[in-house]
Image (cartoon, rainbow, N blue to C red):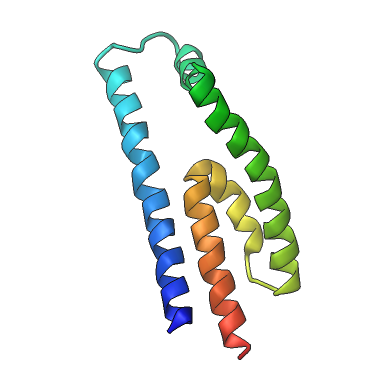
Length: 119
């Protein structure tokens, strides 16, 4: 029962990590399209990154996430090697191409499946 619950939770966080962040990306893209944010591609990219540090609250979340990212990347490496997970290195680019919530949820899902396949 607990195995299925953990797999469900990890699967749901993976899906939420795919959908919820892209909701905000779509809002940003809408602002670019309607002209609220304008300029060259570099200006728009800078505007996106500047938003992560726009105020103390955003800075807190960004700094916290950056430190967490280091720990999670070490976890991916050590657990991926220890459990001999296939393609564990793909979680690194998935973090930046999709989201940290997606890649971590997917990693934990696959890790849980691997741990339970040994029993």
